[in-house]
Amino acid sequence: MADGDCLFCRIAAGELPAKVVYSDDEVMAFRDVAPRAPIHVLVIPRRHLVSVMDLRDEDTPLLGRIFAVIREVARQESIAQSGFRVVSNAGRDGGQTVDHLHFHVFGGRFMTWPPG
Ligand code: AMP
Image (cartoon, rainbow, N blue to C red; front, side, top):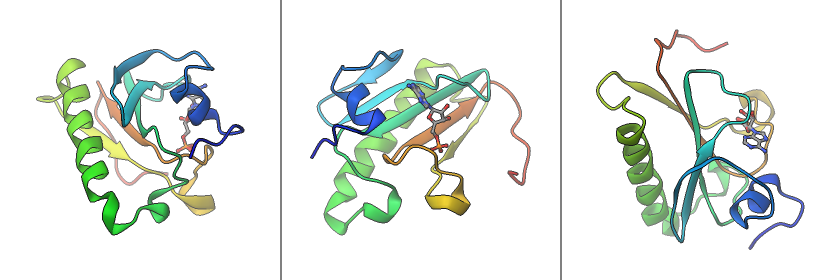
């Protein structure tokens, strides 16, 4: 169910602007407003889930769709061959700042390890 106070629910509903790079009935991808890499796209389920901790066994097909979109975004953004990083921050220690499940797709430069 959409959460009227949730930033990404509002983007998914078209109530707030975003640079959308992919959209279907279940999944959306749009550019991060404060990119941390030359390519920085967020992939979200339209349905409101707070984090990976909200996923249930029956959400396995949704996760498959999300990762299919991640592959599609990587191809569209020409980073499929050079490589990229997928990150989903969860909770306080994970550094999550928007409480709607999202997957960061970072690319276009070498990613250092470990993350900070
Ligand atoms: P996280 O800190 O992992 O929860 O990631 C949230 C991300 O959402 C951050 O990278 C923000 O820059 C990004 N963000 C916040 N507001 C917007 C917005 N209106 N449009 C696009 N990205 C956003």
